[in-house]
Length: 303
Image (cartoon, rainbow, N blue to C red; front, side):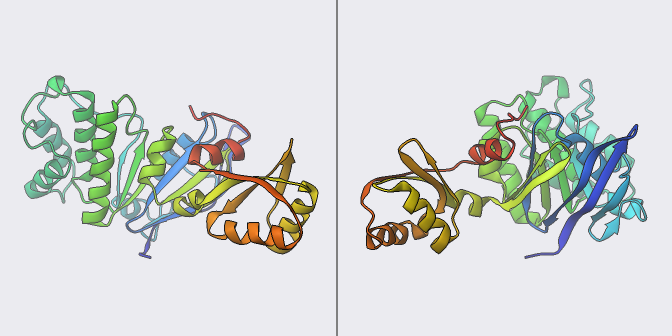
C-alpha cells in the first residue's frame, strides 16, 4: 500500500457549544478511492469543509501528505484539488478562459498542465466553446479539470455526479478511475448514489450523527452475504454458529439468518449435518453497500 495522503485522527468540531463531529478517524492512501457516506445532517459537509480548510477542527489532527492543516496550512492545501458545493464557472467565458484565469492565480501552473488536465477529462473538442453551451456533464468535467491543473495528490469530490444522467455518471466514473491509475492520486468522494460508490471505491467510511460507524474495504464488505437456513432445530443451529464459528445469527420466523463469508458456507452446512441437524432449506442474498448502510444507520436514507 502507498503512503498516506489523508489522515483524520480523533477530529471534533463544536459549533455554538454543540459537538457536530465527535472524534472521527479515517485515512486514504496513495492510489485509493474512499467513499464518504452519510445521511443529510450526518456531518459529511462539515468534515469536508475542515479537510479543505474552509473550517477549523476544534480538536484532533488532519494531515494531507504529512502536513498538518492547522500548523502547515499552505503546504497541506497545495496538495488538494476539490469540487465542493458546486464549481465556480463563468458561463460567458470559454472553458479554456476559465482554466487560464484560475491558473493565473497559481505560480506553478504551466500551459502544459492545463492541456494535460483538459485531455484527462476529455474536453479537447469543446474547451474553446463558451461554458454557456456546455451540458451539465461537460461542466462537471471542466470543474474536474480546474481541480487537476496543479497536479494535486488528493482530490475531494462532493456529490460530483449530482444531476448527471446514467451515461454521464458512467463517463465520470471512467475518468476518475483513469486519473487514479495514471496519476496514482487519492480520491475522497461523497455521494448519495450507493451503487456508484460500490462500483468506484476501494474503501468506505460511514458517518452518522457526527460519528464514524464503520471504516471498511468495499470488497471485504461485499464478500459477506446474508444466508438463510431452515433447520429442524434453529436454536441449536444458532448456538453452533456462535460456539464453533463465532457468527452471530437471528431466528426470524422459521429461518435462521446470519451474515456469512460464502467461502465457508459449504463447510458450515456440512458441520450442521454432522451435528445431527436436518437441513430443510438454505439460500443466500447478495449484500449491497446500501443494505449495509441501512443496517448500520438503522434505516436512515442518504439524501
